[in-house]
Amino acid sequence: MCVEYRDRIVDGVLAARLQAAAAVVIEGARGSGKTASARRQARSEVRFDVDSHARALAELDPGAVIEGPEPRLLDEWQHAPSVWNHVRRACDERRRPGQFILTGSAVPADDATRHTGAGRISRIRLRPMTLFETGHSNGVVSLRGLLSASQVAGPARQVSLSDVTEMLCRGGWPANIGRDTAAAQQYGRDYLDEIHRADVDHSGGLRRDPVGMRRLLRSLARNTATDASHATLAADAGGERPLHRDTVRAYIDALERVFVVEDQPAWSARLRSRSRLRRAAKRHFVDPSLAVAALRAGPQRLERDLELLGLLFESLVVRDLRVYADALDAGVYHYRDNTGLEVDAVVETAAGEWLAAEAKLGGDKAIDAAARSLLKLRDRVDTAAAGEPAGLLVVTAFGNYAYTRPDGVAVTPVSALGP
Image (cartoon, rainbow, N blue to C red; front, side, top):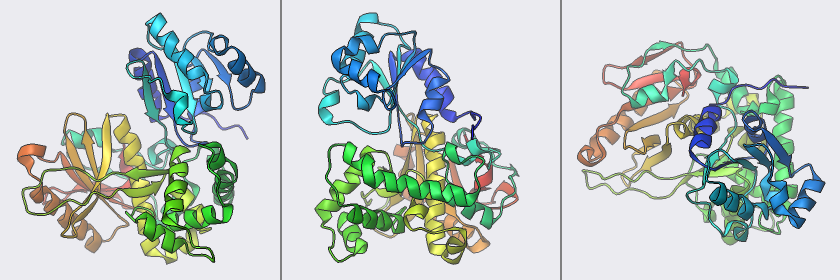
């Protein structure tokens, strides 16, 4: 089935980077759409993952394989790591922007990039598609607008809780556009099978136990959107041969190298109270559908387990916020302190504007509790140092409208959130 290309938020980011940098590296999980997006702006290409002749030529004469109309796409370049230094050298010698686009689904061995691309090469992280990109959100509530303190109001795209559970099961994979939910879920399960069968081994040469990796993936899925330690994950993974926490650390490092899991760091803010920040990062799958696949769950099971559904929904909101934030040169963090105050996401731009967001399935009581947490955070942060928040936001799973409460906290269904 041929799927028509859908515009991605990264398209504009890539175009801008090619105007400024000699080369741009697009990194991200396999299947997230890197090649399709890069091809839209490349004028020539070589695909190292499918072309054995290109890989052989890269070993014999790396300089020859990088020649071609610019921007030249070097797709899945980690399969021919010798080209890196030749790209870097060409960037130095030609001294012009927009020469190369490199895509990569894995971080190669450290020595492949020992000669840094700093000042020449710009990096972009491409994640699976957001709800705005798949058409499940109308984007009437813009992250850019929120960071500009715009008023939140407008109709949301109509979705139900069942629709949201299906979105979580399907994920943002371009290959799943047009597929039914059962086929999309099989895609996620096959994806994980391939990850612990081959991809992890090819990234850094880690020798792994497939059974142990499966147990860890299930543990990561049960603990998604939490700061569970390596020791906690090792204990939770269980099994006849319990995983050692050092093994868990090595496996997670390997999963990070193929962009399957991604940490959400803690926000560093100066507080006006005596509270102390917790520094542990939260961990997410790059797409919540992989957590669903690891648990071999489906929409009906998720609707019966609201605690798990809530964590997966938080992970979905964080995924989309990260994509929208990347386009604004912003990062997505979380907040937790020693008093137990937690906030799911803090978006902070390079210029210092910030907003805080909570993800809740819905219901007046849950929205009220989320609003109280956001207001507490606002009062706890030293705004003389961090500035006043541009916005406080509760993202719900469904609802008819986005609106602003009398206390100033905005509420929006996820089907209205956009870039």
